[in-house]
Length: 415
Image 1: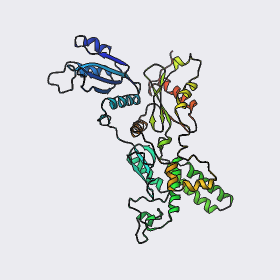
Image 2: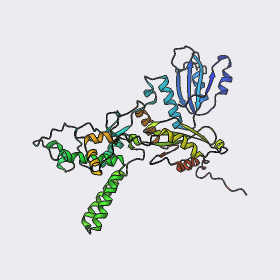
Image 3: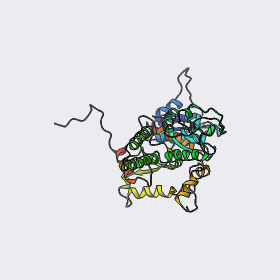
Image 4: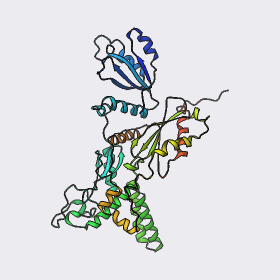
């Protein structure tokens, strides 16, 4: 947790000295009261001194502004070098001091996600803000529900799984919906497909989302090349059009959106200290304890920055975290493994979310709020097979580089 590292007692007899000691910097301010059981007051501000004066200076006559001058005992605060650090500090301390209403204080709303409910006999993909360990497949977060809906509409056009919310009874007399009439659904409602065919289509949806589209793109590229080699140019042209449609549907997919369990990244922010970067690790969607890289001090140490990052990141990441999801028994054949994974039981083993800490949805919301903000401060780098250490170091250099002068204010060469 980003703790408060400064504390000052409030004494009415020495208030001028008190206010002069509070820095004029951005941060989080916590006012503690004299009464032992009184709730503290917490604020985020761009100027700590101005916020303290607004709350503790003598009020103007007739003013209705909150004033805590007569009840405050001390202040505790932390300087913050970025909006992300400020938001995260506010979140941790608001949650600790106001467990019943910290979400309202931060206006914290669950992030928009795509969900495939794998417990349903005939799963469908839909947008939700509820995240639970219910063996479902969760993909996101998105900037908003509207953005998630827009992506899902184009994405689901590539497949033929159902979009209706009715209970599937496989009744041949059922008229079906408009998607079945347009041949955009396998129509399990009136037994338009077998259960195995529908399960195979759901498996393709899950695999495509799990690989952020790479599996489907690679499949069509292989089929197009095979058709070209067989001189079946008509089929190759049709596959090329399908490949363009896939690319169009995936073009609006943000980098942050991926399977929640695979959301591993580092968020880099400038700290208040000179030549210092804060590294916020994001593991399976949960923000971990930050790491401070003071390059002025690290330059004199025998270990490299990459070695320090490896020590902080790698022992705390389970590289086999999804092994339990894919099963522990050795596979006798690729076909047998594919058959098992194409069944609902296989989906839940491989893709189902079975553990969701209470803070997971909140951390996803905090990260999404920062990632989709404009302008966005700091940088994020995602972990694929390994942590991108060289790219992390280059990003640190960019963040520590002096800001370029505004357009039209470039320094003129001296005469």
